[in-house]
Image (cartoon, rainbow, N blue to C red; front, side, top):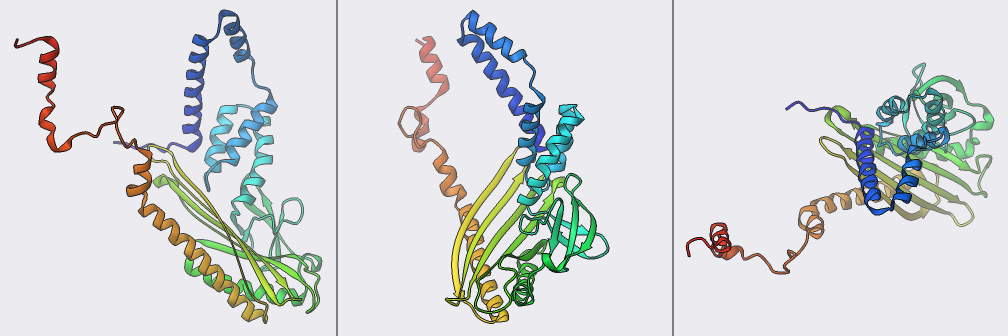
Length: 342
């Protein structure tokens, strides 16, 4: 049997159209003639360009990881209006790219840059702390078009940079082991002007990993955000973590996973290297623990979750006697009803 790639939009559009047809049928039977004419008049009213744009944005923003270009291609064909599509795409793509923390290759062999709100400077410019470069991004095409050196005002002080750089080095080791196709960056989001001990500052470590295989009808993504408050006065590092896991399987169907989790922890504020090792160890512990809990829940799906979805008893409220099925005979029941053999 030949298998065809069905994009997420196509499935949703067909579902939506079928739902509309069923709704229209129900309305036809439920309303009086006067109400029916009113409903038909409303149905014949064409959507405004603003309404079309908002609907298009919804589809784009809800596209699974790595599939927005497929959705955009179908939307452009369905809308048949370049102005509406361009406006929707220009508003939706930046939000989508930042929420999924996509990774783009920078020209000039500078490496990759993560598109995140934490590295956003102005316009379409995004800081890459590892290389101290600023990438100019085309959101709709999802490419990095230019690179420029970051200015001193866009970078933290040497004191803060020592902590940031040490943490990034440990995070790169961890991500390389745990997420083969993952990327990470560490940003200073508060107190980047701190010159020395005695003041607080805040770092954020982000991890983004995606495994995209649309030819095999599946995609998956992982994003984690770790905010680290460095409180010098009480010599404590407070961590707040947020995880988001997404998966999409769409071979002859449409199954999606969207799981989120939050956690907290703390450790002592030490030297840059010791603090980085302690933070990376805590991050590794919490993420490994969460992944293990996800795996355990999947192992319980057949025995627990799926059983809970089914009716425990038939509508007769009586268990079927599997041990004695001989008492049921279709031929005997039909003969009895028809009076045959009497």
